[in-house]
Length: 177
Image (cartoon, rainbow, N blue to C red; front, side, top):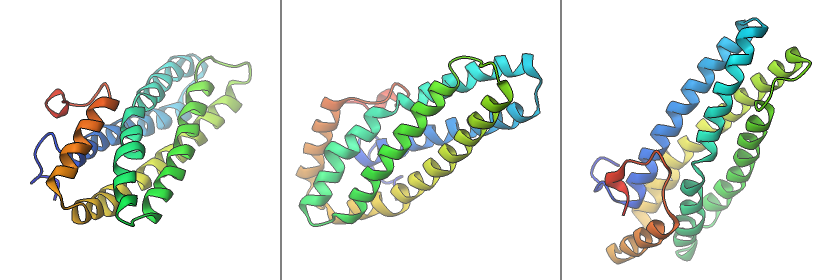
């Protein structure tokens, strides 16, 4: 479905960003496995790596902003209210988890064992929640938007508004502007 879209289409860009976010989640889950197996010295090197990945996820904020400020309102204008509302609620939860992970991995604490447990649980919850969220957007919300928003002029206007908000630092440059 997304393959047929032009590279600069609003939905294709969001889908491509999801692919990158999913690769970050893969890396996080791999580091979680290492985190649970390592000694104290190794843990102190893993926490900054996890922190870096949490910062990459936080840097995806323009993606959520474009959904919340452009895509969701366009859907709501034509009477599709429930799915965008659910996604907004999930965005808030996901934002909170990303920031919690960042905060929890900024420094090694005195009780490293408890910190490892907290970080491990945060990664588990964040990855699970975000994977499910992306799956719903890719397989339900985006197809619904493509099917329901039929005016090409509307998509062109949405693209302009997306350009004004901006893109994730990892967004392929051929999908910007």
